[in-house]
Image (tube, rainbow, N blue to C red; front, side):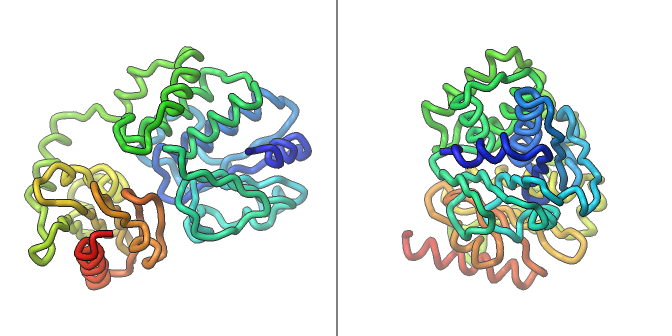
Length: 314
């Protein structure tokens, strides 16, 4: 794995790294980590990272995205990370590059780059970037290691999800050996002030069960989002798992209105929910996926599909 990608990295002097929109820790961790790895091991190359703002992950070193003109893609290599479909990629200009490549760990949906390294056995795209560094014997600086570790921690649920493997811990140990401050990373990711703890109780009170099924959900209106002062993505991803330990609930979804669409975070402890996410233009993993829908009515349609999925036992 990665042989053609490594050849491309060696060949191209200008490399532009993309990831999915509404970035989570893995999207940014793999993006920022790969940039730093290339800069550290191929110092003569120019490496850019592009996409929408880092949001709640702005604490990560180098998280400010580069502003580049279309002409930067002329004769460049574009690498897309952590994106199951072309529609999820932030900044579609990657298609302007001389060569395109992708590293992803999601269930396969489509081919949209010339070179593709897809492996669903990894807990994160960041884990794949760590494996790339290990296979190539690259120098892993503290900055690169911290970014990659952040991505691995978040997408593995702090190493608790069933995608976590012995390899995950081997790669995490390699990153820890670079001298990262894991306590600081966890503090930046998960420490909350008293007001945010109180705010969580407000979301707990909004939990509903859909149509007497095993599907739970929260629906956050745009007005409610504005009242919290939080970014929609922070609510969408940050609050979804408050439903994870409810007895009798096997599937849970957090819906959060943003602009003229609704962010959807889907989770399950038992079922492969990815096909439902794909139906609505999203994707992800068997038990953790995301999508966007246009309104409340479509959100309810998604819940009906999830109820039907659970009824089949798949």
